[in-house]
Amino acid sequence: MSAMQRHLLLPSLAFLFFGAAAFNPKTRPDERNAILISWDGALREHVRADLARGKLPNLARLAGMGALVDVDVTGHQTDTKAGHAQMLTGYDPALTGVYSNGKFDPIPSGYSIFERLHQAFGKHGITTIMLTGKDHNLGSRAPGWFSHGEPYYLVRPGITVWDGDQMRPASMVGEKAVSYIREYAKKGRFFLFVHFPDIDLNGHRHGEGSEAYDSAMVECDRWLGKMMTELESQGIDSRTLVYVSADHGFEVGTKNHGNAPHIFLGTSDPSVSRVGQQRDIAPTILRAMGADLAKISPALPGTPLGK
Image (tube, rainbow, N blue to C red; front, side, top):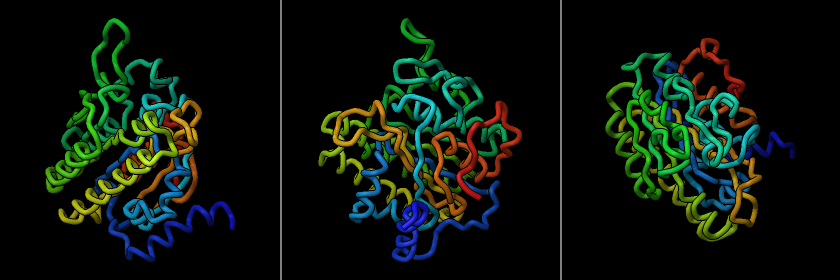
């Protein structure tokens, strides 16, 4: 079996099991919503093993609508600050200033997905929401004695709804995510970023191969299912794309991720069709929502993960 066949086998089986896709690819790009979910520290080999065991039914369902592809972290440290900076901008550290958890500057204003969407569709043309589960590494605090400001200090004013700078588990993050879907479902277009910290935290405490790490992944999948159900309840699933990825993986059987570039992208986006790099996630989402990538400056180094 070829590598490409291995990539597409799981989504194909999920499609047969769960039925037709909820997202309608005929929806005009400039009418679409999108949700990007980060499973902080989710190693793709562990994700695929759990999928094979039937432990992540909602990710399987999502992949059955679109795809599940391998993604590699390149060009920066495999940690939370650098991974999310690239995921949410598409740029490498030379432009974002975020090299690692310990070496960082604020991301320049205007460089994030949130701000790019406002540039493309206007301040009132789309609602952007950033919801996180850590009070560090995804923070927005102002400059102080030991830093020039956290990564999202300059980005935060360009986001419609900032809900971060707090430590909270999947149960709290998930409830908030569902409530935001419910609140903004009928108010026009939205882009929602949701960060779940639990997999990473349990990896550091108990190790990648632990029951706690695995249980955290199952819990994140449960909340993915609740968000998808809410999209259906609100009648917006046919025009809302969902993407699930990670900032970094984990070193197998350890409590570390110093060299952990193996992540993934699971999505209902039927245009996604190839393996890629973390820098490709931002242009994939921006193009799917109708933004003109040719108008973005500085030019994004990555390319969309599909047709």
